[in-house]
Length: 336
Image 1 (cartoon, one colour):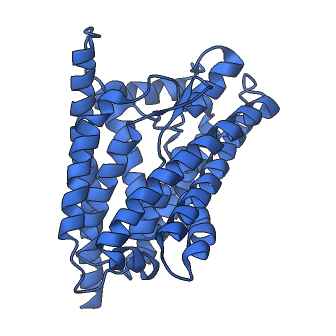
Image 2 (image 1 turned 180 degrees about the vertical axis):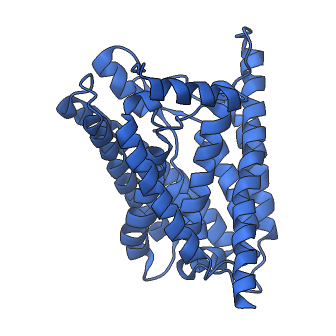
Image 3 (image 1 turned 30 degrees about the vertical axis):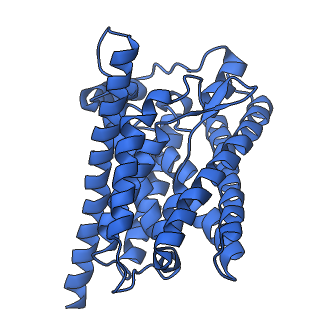
């Protein structure tokens, strides 16, 4: 559900950038009180997994569309809402800068749509409410499915509102919302099942990691080595191999736009959009997770996907873990 720059006006993009910056600053302030050295590498490796997992679009049967996980609930369940939100923000900026997945102007929209609603609404009010009486596989799956649906429904509706406020008359509000909400209901359900499986695995391997997401701090004796290794392997397998089998169908947002306009994209030709598009082209390494080449063979496509998954996963790991390390050291300095 990554929004392109052409879907929003500069004014809406600016407001959403300010909103996302405010939530990021708030998360940094809150997490400084609970940050420890173990959480930083966990932020990196789980963030890298979310990056790789978002590359894999799954087909929505009978629609001609596809979807991918947002990752907000997964990150909040494993890291807590503040670290989860910061990690997803890192994932989204890596995607925008180096893979042209989501625009620079729309970065704030994507952070709010995919991160804020999941980490600060669906997680505390749905996931934690369902699991507050104790963890079990049944409660975990119920909580993740319900919270993923709620988070994605709010995010999808937010996309519609942002295009409306941007004056995108090509996308009439009633028609757009009638397409966006049902398709993202299906995507949210599938994401919830995937998220439930991952959270259940971690809960069975290291239940204290899941329990610590509530307090925000990993217990001193908590060993995260095996979980770290498992996620690192998942990043390599998911980004390096499973990415070959991603659905080629347009995602839920693109599909909804195509149903209305006949194309998955809307053009914006004003100077602000043009300048940001030119700036993004200078930073992109692998546009749309593929090599900049005329070779459209399956082998080339698979190689580009693998390279994108491994490089993007590595960049995300470095950025998210780096943010965690900086915050951990900042906390230690203030403590001393």
